Image (cartoon, rainbow, N blue to C red):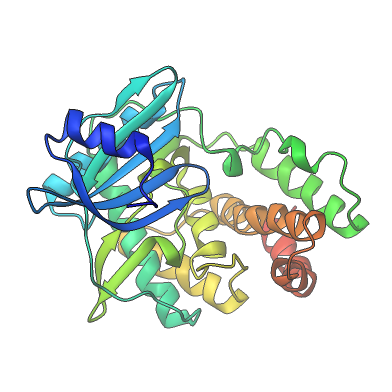
Length: 295
């Protein structure tokens, strides 16, 4: 198995009691994620990432409690094992289901209702916040890799306005999924089959969680900003499932959050000479999104 990292082979034998005999997949981005079939017949996913704050353990605890309630997420098979600042855990492999590739209002509404159900479920759990929040939703600071990049004035201006709006928000935080994009979900017959990437939990105002998701829900493979009408449908469906409308100020925060990740991704497209998907969509949508955010 040339694609299997040595650490994964050793870890499975030590903590799952069986050695891998086949590799299902192996990907690496912010963390290493390896799907394997064990000698005892189990299909499992092993995740490994740097964690010096205990954040990973709190995310996996939330995931386990949700899975026990019947929410469509993989059941963790181990606790998080931390060694030298690196956290590893295993979860059940959940195959099947379809990737939602559409960014229509109908797809947006389905995704928005599922997120509202998740946030409601987590509000009823006694959980410690998994702080610090993921880098991409830390309003107070820009990632250092962008600091020296030459970008158009309109991106700089929009970023400052959105950052000021979000950093000044004093709404109470809740626990939610801050990486709510299509590539992290699978559907079956219109129902959610599996939600993945629970490292993306964040402790933020509910309107910011919903707004961020409304902007990125359709992303799969190549990140891109959703159409305006689909973001609007997402938020309306979220509010309906929630059973309460956002206040005017909460709505502004939601629209501010909806553009934040696209601003970062557009910068990356310029820095690394990638296809300008976010850049072009931001260019077309920024005026309306900023107006709705009152930013």
